[in-house]
Amino acid sequence: MYSREQYNDAICAPVIVHFTNSFFVQRPWVTGKKNRHPFSEIWEQYKNKSLWAGDEAITKKASLRCTIEQYIQKMPRQLVVSVMGALYCYIKPVKYLIRRKRCIGTKTMTLL
Image 1 (cartoon, rainbow, N blue to C red):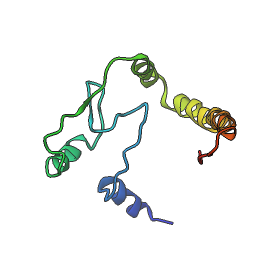
Image 2: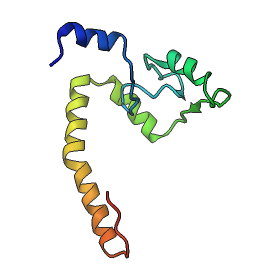
Image 3: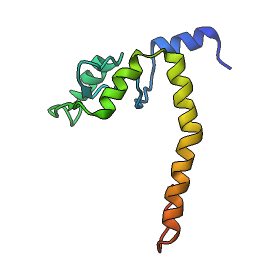
Image 4: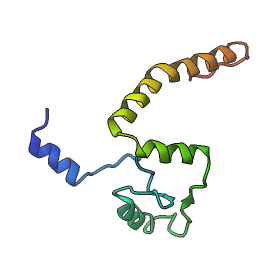
């Protein structure tokens, strides 16, 4: 168990940051007016020191998903977390089961 001080230190000065998709914030390499990632500037500094220094950022195009994300961002955060938790807990496993049933008839079955 970590102390409150250790926890606060880790939040304020992270050593490793794992960038994941979220309806609340985009990954730092995705451009657009909705990108509010708190580490975007730091990520850009390190990118410019890497082999990818000259590469363009990914521009997020307007799509149905983008429109849905904009509406979700306006909803109360706790509601979104509850709904997304239910989707990942109940809907996503069903998707994998359906995918697995399709794979059973093939010569090779991959792990899902």
